[in-house]
Image (cartoon, rainbow, N blue to C red; front, side, top):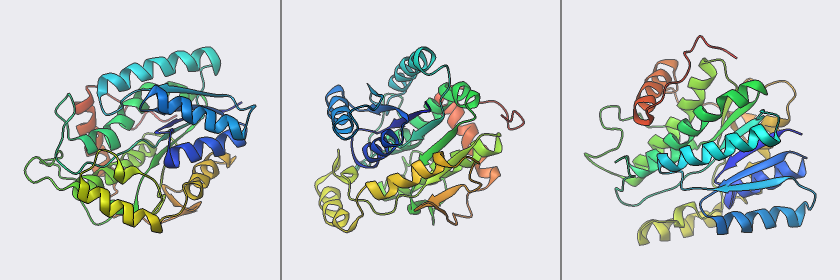
Length: 283
C-alpha cells in the first residue's frame, strides 16, 4: 500500500484530496491545525470509505518548532507502519492574512505558512520519499504569475500588501518544486483554480473576508482540483511537467528559472537553519 501525506487535510482541497486518495486505496496521513478538526476530517473520510487506512496528526505549521515536532511524529509513523517509504507528500497547507503579522521567528505569516512550512517539512521527509521514488506536490496558484520575489525584502516589511504576499508565496511554491526537480527529485505544482473553500475567511479582516465570501461562490468544488493530485500519483511513469491544472500541463511564469530556484533554496535554508543536498545529488 502506497502512503501519501497531505498537509492542510482537514478542509477544502486537502480534505477532498484525502478522500480521493483513500478511495484509490492509498494509506492517507493527514496533517491539520487542531485535534478537533483532524478527528472530524477522519470521520468524514471513513464515512465514505470505512475500510480506509487513515491517520491524522495536528500542528500549527506556521511555527517552525511545530513543523519539526510534527515531522518527528511522521518519521516515527513512516518507519513503524510504512516500511520506511513515503510515495507522495502533498504540501497543501496555506493561508491568507489581511495585516502584517509574524511568526515566533519574526517571519511574515503567509511566507512562513505557504512556503517555509513545506520547505522545512519536505527536508525532514526526503529520505523516505527518495526510498519510494516518490513525488512531492505543491498547491500553487495562477496568481504566481506577474510578480517577482522581493529578494531584498521577502517579508515585505517595507510595504505590506496581503495580495502581494500571497502571490509571492505562490511563486515560491513553484520555485521550490523547480528546485527539487533540479536536485533530481520528482516535484510538481498544482494550480487548483478558483475553488469554493474558506481559505480567505480564516484569520482575515472584515474586508478580505467579505471579498472572499463573494468571490468563492464562483469557484468550483474542491473535489475538482483534488483529481489532479491523484492523477499525478496514479501515473506509472512520472509525468514530465512542472505545473498542472485539471490534470494537464500548463505554462508558468518566466520567473521560474533554475537561478531563481537556487536563490530561493539558499534563502529558505538560511531562514529554516537547514541544508538540502546539492543539485548534483540526484535520486
